[in-house]
Length: 153
Image 1 (cartoon, one colour):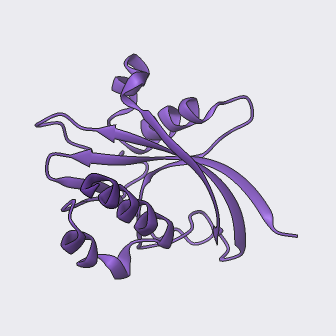
Image 2: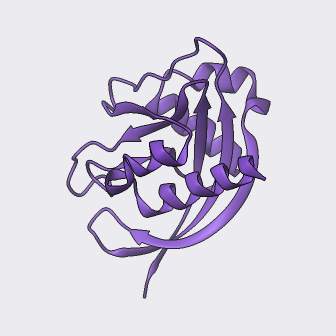
């Protein structure tokens, strides 16, 4: 039987491009080691998706307090189901609540000391995405391309 997880992630857009995290290599603790992925994580019992994302952003980045004080900065985008990789490389069905977060000029994302992930900004263009295609998770890649196609419409 395939495991099911509910998660929430943020597509973070800065004036310079999309902000992603390079997943730390923590075998058995995190899926997709070394890959570029959105910030976010699991929805715990009793949380809604926005609450979970604000908690996760507080654990993973310097943006937690700002988002707790101003949760409307997280704009719901869509909920997507996909089968991805789990912590032990096992298949996991995920229901992902996707939000958008636009950063102000000069606002930076820093990874928390505990998370210790590399923050990577890629240009918000097809060429920018293509230049990192091999290192972006399949889910993040599909969402970034969807964001770009919506901007072109």
